Length: 151
Image 1 (tube, rainbow, N blue to C red):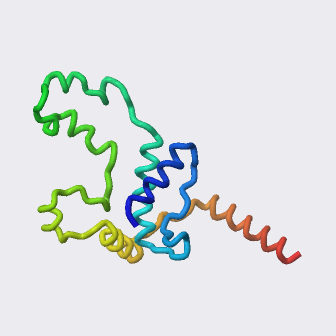
Image 2: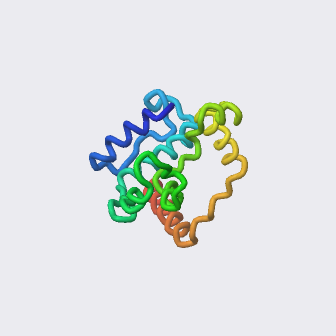
Image 3: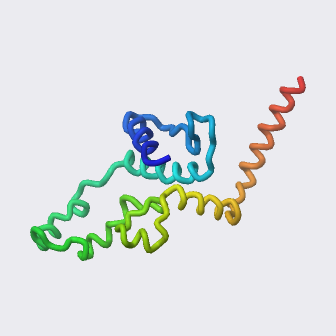
C-alpha cells in the first residue's frame, strides 16, 4: 500500500507509458480500496511531475544564491528557497515531519490519513457539473449504443 506503487508506475512512465494501471487496486486487482485510490492519486501526481521534467536554468540552479550564501550555511532561510521550495512536490498524505512533530500530531501513517480524506471526500465532495455539450454528447452515445443493442 505504500510507495512501491510509485516506483512501479514511475519506471513505466519514464519508459514512455502514458497510462497508470491499477489505482485503488490491491492483490493484483482482486481487491479495490478507496483509501488506496486516494493514495495512488497522490503517487500519480508525483509521477506526472517527474515525467514533466525540471527546469535547468539560471533561476533553478541559483548559482548566485549559492555563491552569496557560501558553503555550510543556511539555504532554507533564503528568499529564493522559499519561493521555489513547494514547486517540486507537495504531498498531502505523505508526512515529512520529524518524529516529534509526527507523534504530537497523532502518529498516523499515510494510509490512515488517506482513509480520513476518503471519508471526507465521500461525505462532502461536490463535483463540478459536466458542461451541457459533454452531457449531450454522452446522451447521444448512449442512445446510439442502445439502438444498436436493440437491433
